[in-house]
Image (tube, rainbow, N blue to C red):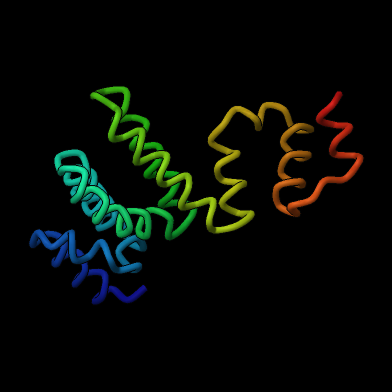
Length: 147
């Protein structure tokens, strides 16, 4: 938590170099920097054609799935924006992020489950999560699902 580093990153962000900062994992550490980088990247991703979209997507996924906080914040922002505008591109971004976080293993699966309504059913949630995290089934979890 170096104040000089935070100040330098903030100044670079304020100078308009969000695209360069987006590839740094430290950009997601500072919320104000992350927020400006995120808004810049989202605006770019919405406005560009399909070819540029595909080239910008890896950096977007990298910065947004850096931590649980950035992932959940980004999904919340995308969801909010989807309600206000034409949401095709935003829906695709949300799905791409979901796929990116699932690559992170069991923690990614748990975060995806948190964004669904499955958490309203704790027994179903625990059975599914156990089976998916272990990549195996057991009779007790199967019975929970069946009942």
